[in-house]
Image (cartoon, rainbow, N blue to C red):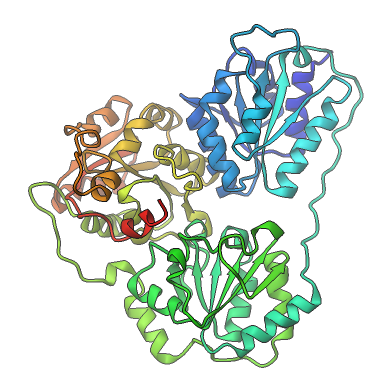
Length: 543
């Protein structure tokens, strides 16, 4: 005899979900073990919030469905920030949430889990009965993979414990064919691109996986290439790539994007972050948006053309319609400028390293040279975040994991853990502020326990730097703190650790990289005040 809990776990294992994460309590004990018995690896986090973001980052980095397993009630509420981030980012994440049974109306664990889940933009599903358990589970899985949604599958305890029907086979769930755009839309987009003298393609999350098709179309039409932050790395090593568009864009990238006469967003929201509240769109530029979601087209700004379709399929169809190759924006002068000036590390600056600590630019440039090139960079939120995002190179689209859909501080460390497990062949780099690092400190034990080859870099300005700089004339006593020995905290959890106040202190990082890397490394970098990072003023225009 098998129970419904065992049926749910076994079904998901049979459907091919990836890693599972969670904190196990009485409500999710059996379904978690059923996943494990089916061959799904499981990581026990120290907090449900961390587990949620680990599962999110694993799914983003691996391309497979991540699974989060939670106790009823408080297990779900503890995880809600991570679930909200995943829902806002359209991460294919399946949450298995135990729920109180129908008769447990006075249980301390009882809340309206369906309402809570829907309130943050996730999809609420439920295993209703033993007879429907297989169909309910498969339906939830299909919503995750076919709609790229975060789905919470509620598992009532009384249903979980019931005997499951025998002889039910797990059905195949074949991948859906890409949605091809309408021929009229293809023709109109081809005409707009071929008539443009300075086209720029901005690729977003929806373009991941379409690198080959976008490169071919850009080559034929003379388009320059940029990405949103979440798609960073998509066009690495391309001579016509501008890097990230938006607040993190280098001065040259911003100049070239704002000089475009046609901007095409490929699976990209073209929101205030990516387009600097519209400042990166020239007054005479036409705007096109290609997306699978009709509701996304024109949601953030007016567009001259919206194309409903898969990015790769659309790019291929447009390429077939453009005719003779064009030079477009790809002139010799532009090529030379990109080669010499496209990266932030090429920009001159006054080094602020001194008694207060190391300049964050000096730190970031040095880390970029010291750390292995095969890396996965995960960035938390805060005043510091532009430095690792702009200065630390990544090898490809899988090398950058940016959980910023909800803009919550404290997700960066868990992001790095999930990404590290998705790509164990690479060194994971968690870039955190001191605020986020201390919020998430319990998961340092998870890193050490798993033996992950990780470098945790804390940009430690002894406070919530964004608020310090944004409210320049205010009372900062609520957002500044005494110096904390974060390196000592790391050692307590089993890390090698170093405090960095000047470039010479980074010798310890070079020694760790050289091996044997027997423990993860924590770098507590006491950073000098930057007076408010270059991207911060732009970001706060949206608040």
